[in-house]
Image (cartoon, rainbow, N blue to C red; front, side):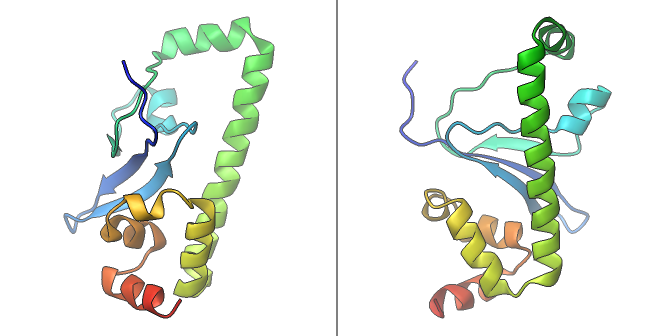
Length: 142
């Protein structure tokens, strides 16, 4: 299997308005999951889509638990990654409810410098809590 030079995935949910709402992106060497669904063994309310050619690793809950029990160092790394993910999620929520569109846009471009030009505008707008029209105006004013 060939590796892609770039890969990206997205975690999204379809709202009552039938619109896709971007929750998270994963780029090269990142990981993505619906951790709540995985840990609770309940069906996910989210979708994960590969936007480009990607190589995926699938873990089953039982095997994952065995791996964590067998390797305290791996467990510590996962806990650190999970804490960073939670912090990033909280920061994104705060940004989306308190910062102007231009600031959110600049942060997105800084955080995902190789992704922005590889995804449709509507996905970036959804992630930023903006309409595509507003994001277009923000880009034009940059």
